[in-house]
Length: 258
Ligand SMILES: Nc1nc2c(ncn2[C@@H]2O[C@H](COP(=O)(O)OP(=O)(O)O)[C@@H](O)[C@H]2O)c(=O)[nH]1
Ligand SMILES: [Mg+2]
Image 1 (cartoon, helix red, strand yellow):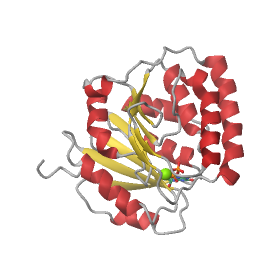
Image 2: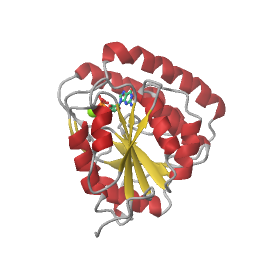
Image 3: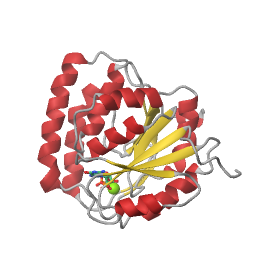
Image 4: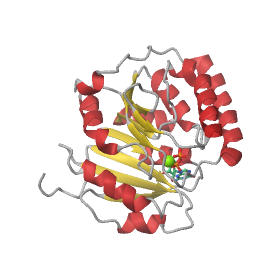
């Protein structure tokens, strides 16, 4: 593709929540912008930094590459708060978020964009999709925790098998509406975001991804698990009172249809 107009926001704006990501962000931006620059539409990246004490903000601000990167500061800590602020700052027709470490391979984004342009409302990466290529290292405690967490979300998300993969894309207006209602500031926000989308009648499509367990995780079982569980129980209680949504679309092959 030729040179791009770097002024406005692209058709796809990808939010990256980033806290103390100086060690991983540059590689992440390089990988992501390489994929985005090949898309048939203009794309942009919004890095949302909350209170990093390292060079995260500097790296985002000084970044120069094939797609524009803007930096947003979020005063409230937590991945959920950062993603909320990022999504609300977008105006693009399509948006979504991924982690700074690119644990989920962004090479699936051309398919994601095609599905969104064909009318899909919510496309999420799923490490439990039978066609996913997932490399799992140690950390059995976290795996057991994740399974339990997921069982507790199944009914309110309409059968989503992996709510916690940090790779979710949306029709822009839906993302902004769902993010506006988001209260969960921590790692359990994904569940509430999906519930908010369902409450608005959106179907959720899980797609296969390539996933690598990257070193340097910002999630700590000891620091975050109890808060996540508490948030999940609150989201569950609220969702069971309000959600009356369509069933999940069974979509194993839809990825290749767009
Ligand atoms: N802005 C912001 N980003 C966060 C915060 N906590 C986590 N993140 C980001 O959320 C993403 C979570 O991914 P990661 O740390 O790799 O966790 P894991 O792979 O799920 O263990 C990374 O991009 C983090 O930098 C936070 O408090 N603020
Ligand atoms: Mg990670």
